[in-house]
Length: 160
Ligand code: DLZ
Image (cartoon, rainbow, N blue to C red; front, side, top):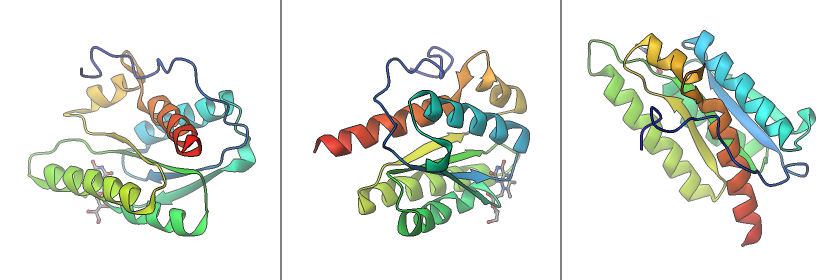
């Protein structure tokens, strides 16, 4: 199912996050989109019970740098989960494909190798309007979805 059929802001009931901590890595590209994703993310963590003091933000230059920024956070912040936020808008060259593949693989690999949930809160739209629609627009907010995923994965890890 694509996000056109599923509203990204519909999280359902979330586990209590009052004793959880999160690092949020955010790309500086397309800031009007990524800041909206970040707001949705933080509001969702707080609504689930997390305190502001347990949310640590780190900025990276672009989405390509998200995996390394996340690795630094895993090694130094010792948070329960790391949430990566970015927006890569398709251009005229294959640059888009290289960045998206690298970021998705990097985030997945880091999560599998570290055992810490590392969440893919990255939009990969074809144009600006598709990004707006998923950053608090008609398809919801991917930052909310990323935060909800992080809380659920921390809960799952604790169960084991
Ligand atoms: C270079 C580039 C381009 C063209 N587009 C984006 C984008 O839409 N979103 C994004 O987050 N970053 C972009 N970047 C920057 C790369 O992610 C990266 O920061 C640079 O290639 C330097 O490694």
